[in-house]
Length: 120
Image 1 (spheres, rainbow, N blue to C red):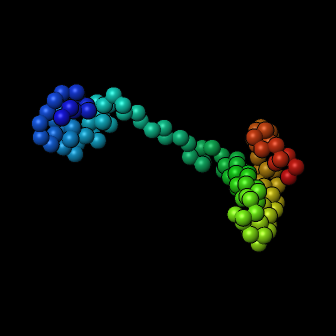
Image 2: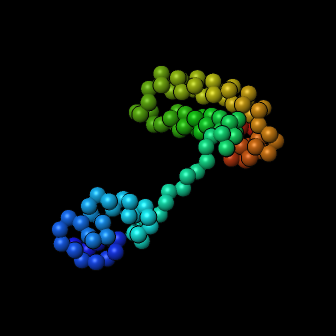
């Protein structure tokens, strides 16, 4: 078998470098494997900004409800469509309050990403 860390041939359950014996994750994290790439950490909601995060979440929820409402007639009942419309109206009223908590720059960026949000 060929070792995925050091490239040498070995017989048995593990290579001399430790790959294959359950320690391969530790070897991969150490950067021994050429295909290893660390995952990006991203930022937290607090670093992003609570009001902006809430506004973007509300906009995404409204977009999703609009997609649901435009499903073909055989995929949703009239009762479901009415419920989705009510949920959308509730989110629209909530976003109107949330946008007021944003700075001018954040509000402009939000309206640029979601042009319909300017009407709220």
